Amino acid sequence: MLTAELIVDSRVPSNPALSPDGRWIAYQVSTIAKGVPEIWLAAVDGGEKPRKLAEGSLPRWSPDSLYFLRDGLIHTEDGPLFAWRSEITAFLPMRERIVFIAEDETPAAEIWVWSESLRPARLRSFDPRTGEIMTLIEDHVVDVARRQDDGALAVVSWPTPEVDPGSLEPRLSVLDLETGERRELGRAAFEATGPVWWRDGGGWHVAYLGNPEVVGGRAVFDVPVETGEHRNLTPDAACPVKLAQVDSGAPLMLVADGLDTALHRLGAGEVSLWRGQADALASDGEIVVTVLSTAHRPMDVHCGLIGGPLTRVSDTAPEFAEISWGSQERLSYKASDGHMLDGLLVLPPGRTRADGPFSLVTRVHGGPYDRHADRFMLGWFPSAQWLALAGYAVFLPNPRGGQGHGHEFAASVGGRVGLEEWSDIETGIDLLIAEGVADPERLGIVGGSHGGYMTAWAVGQTRRFKAALMIAGICDWGMLAATGELGPLVESAHAGSIGWEGTGPHRHDQLSPISYASKIETPVLIVHGADDTNVPLSQAEFFHRALRHFGVEHDLVVYPGEGHRISEREHQLDLLRRSREWFARLL
Image 1 (cartoon, rainbow, N blue to C red):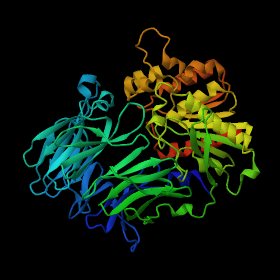
Image 2 (cartoon, rainbow, N blue to C red; image 1 turned 180 degrees about the vertical axis):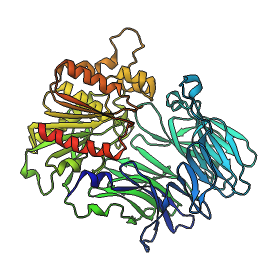
Image 3 (cartoon, rainbow, N blue to C red; image 1 turned 180 degrees about the horizontal axis):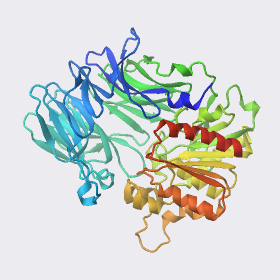
């Protein structure tokens, strides 16, 4: 029997790292609820049962040892290497040093003053032989990569620790570790991350993931160190997810491909296509390691030769093996204007379409640059299998704005959120009703973050839903531009305007659910984290006050100490149980 406890206490692998000799994979195992992560070791050939090494996270190999983070410090199996009084956020073991990113060891001020509160995370170096710690770069560093010969570092930095405008103005540079010389390679793309090194006949290159535009998803940029020219190497049809540096040759990358995931070689195209969702990547150039989930298998570590079949080498959630899950079906259909769309349908266990019509809950993904891949749909969020095992059919649409269908598909929501993407969702619901799968009198909708926005938008556009669940959702784009951590440029790129652009009427008001509150009749359960900085609590409070003013049945649930993701075990349990009760009573 599936319980809420079984979900939040289940374990998920992440951050795989391949040993230098290609024989071992170290990876992190964490519970879905907030807890102490662990480092596990699996054999590439599957000849030994995976075993736990230690408590910790972010495993990293050096030529002769394994390192990981524990309690914010760099550890080996023998213990911590040195003391540092602020959290280390990233590190790279090298032959003669360990490079790490951490803030200054300065306590935060009790009184918050904006101009005095910015604490850059600087790039530092620790020498295990002497115990010396040096600051290599004073800027706010967000990512770093070591060159294969350990002679240089590629560094992504921001002009300020603030997400706005830091992520909008990243810079790429190369630090020579022999001379200490830093060479600027210019402004990088928006939200630049994940730099990797590679070499061709013309010399060294640095590639990284970044957004060509504020709306429209990611691309891979390649920068020859000699020229410093940033070139977008991603075809418009591709949606890269991760990059992996290899010992020689061009880097590998994961690409979201419809409901599946492809492995590409940079500049050379597809190497493999994997059914489901892969969201981690490590490789030495011959062996590839990923964390993969398919429709009825949760995330596990897989590996194999590049271009060959993958073998599962971990089993992190064996407790799910005996549970009967709902069937998961791939959907393909046309939008009202002819665009091809995809999505998923999950039915209750043991049921088929012929048993319909069912109560249907539509689960909208976040982002908007995200997707529903054909993976195992279970988590702390009121997920498809959690609802299907309660008797509901669950529709998981991939409307415009998401990943997996190229740049144009993703960029089409710029200044138009809630328009075509809502039409895409509603078209799918109408199709399931016409096919006898969904009962038009028993429709519900749920979403978080941008999916929470779409939930709030939907109930203001139609009265067809009998229940809605809005988690960390947006109701007013103008207020989000003023208070959300992503700032005015990002939010106005989605909604079309900012409140300081004169007296209006503003484009963002036309696309804000709060503007349609007087039309809402659907009961809405509003859920939010009290300390959310991405979508602040004020969004939930504003929507709550509007619904109260218009006499709409609703409830507001605020989880103390939580950010944009609900992490505490008791809060996750409450959300899972509360969501089922909400839909059970109203559907």
